[in-house]
Image (cartoon, rainbow, N blue to C red; front, top):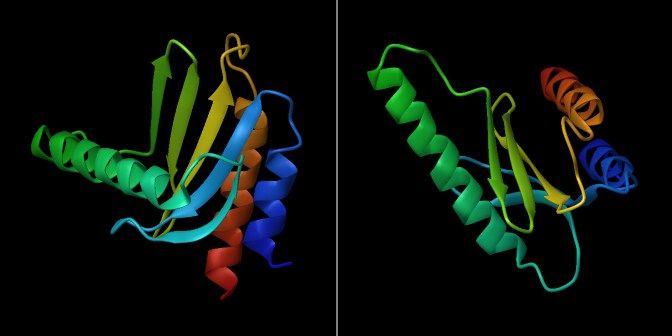
Length: 119
């Protein structure tokens, strides 16, 4: 198992996490740990569209690049985190309250950024 897959699998061990993936800005799946029934390519396409759009909008407003985007919905949350040349996508279930597993997400993002610098 590679570093990315191991990091995603470890993140998914948290009870609040329903899945995780690393996707490219053009919507390709680099790695994923998603529950059955979730299409990785659909998750990747939506995540990349949202992050690229947020980046563009924030850039036009002179706020800089989007580092993290959290979307809350009736049945859970989606957390998108910018990495070096990709995005970490974390799906959280509806039972997640407050900050949820943010520390674990931050740790995995840092680990993946470090792995990208070594490759």
